[in-house]
Length: 485
Image (cartoon, rainbow, N blue to C red; front, top):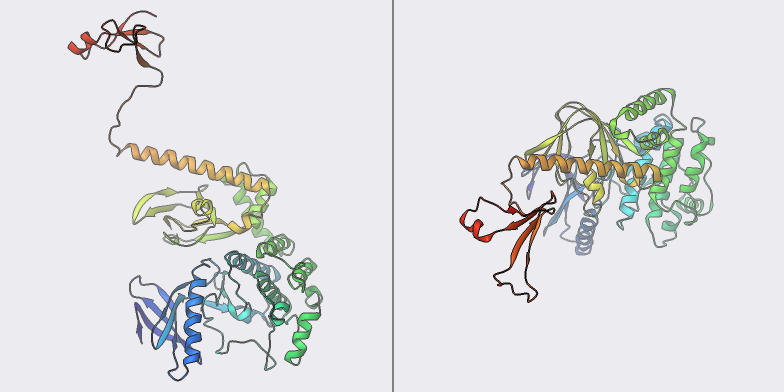
């Protein structure tokens, strides 16, 4: 297996016309990652120039989209004869596996998947990045129920076929492209939301929003026709999802969702209308756990339900590291049960337990969304992770309670840190207290060297003391002598 820079290839896991993909190891950190290698064609200088420019551009874009639901690009290297990309290695299946009639996921799971995609695309769009190729093949659904959007930067979906375009009935087709893409209009983040709406339509119904026998007919339908309501194609889909899908697929940009967070907000409200009985029972248990947590004592019942809508329920087993120093992320949350060790540069800072707020610094400092400490579960931990972008759309009452919780948490930690510092800090210099002071009384001539000048001190007990310099000089421990009140 080849070695490229600091990366050692372990096994080949994919091969295309121009690229080979390896599962590899970073020899410095030991991290397992995916390595995509492209060999330049010595006889095609024009194609090589395009590839070099693409690598440079996409590497720059990838540096701006560090998000838990976007595959991360670690490094892009261009050499004379080849180029390679080191990226996050993701185990899971593309959403393509769940778009067939016989493999559809339950509607509430589809809603949860599209919600996470919408928030990730909102994050990217706010940083000026448009994906332009959202489709089921470019979104991985992991075994833990999370999602990862591929092909930000030059990330590669390791489980898709070797072709780069979407096919319908053997004809190359813009099946997931927005009307403005087809018209070759300038694009913004709304084009990704249209494509995501098409993915949602397919995952709910098992068919594409628009189908045709040839490319021209398909493009005409995308630009001019409306898709059918999803509930009319799949009776198990609640009608509450029809207006959401319809708005995502609007031709008019003014009518379509403008931000992914808006789509996520509507999906959040719809999710609670489509849960089955088993999910309702689980949701009720989660509500009870949050209601009993000391961090949420001041929250009303409606606000507890709102917290559940904008959060993710995470379970970490003993020994699991779930936050790392320098890791990108602006979500925060509350430990519902269990104990967590907090460390910095390998040194233990303390222990956190149920009811403690976690990760609030990354939320408070959005310009630098990086974790400042490492957290490891000492016991099995239940952690309620609040989505920072979704939190921005929460009600004013909910945000206000969380802001009070953050302020209280920071105050408690500051006091605790001060108490720990006392045990190792040196003795401090003692100064005159604010309640006692001294000054000189001099004759009207205002001569500071006048022998008749007298020094007095007013003390906190109301007493007036005269300072006899001669006495103090001879006996420093004598101190001031009282001269009445």
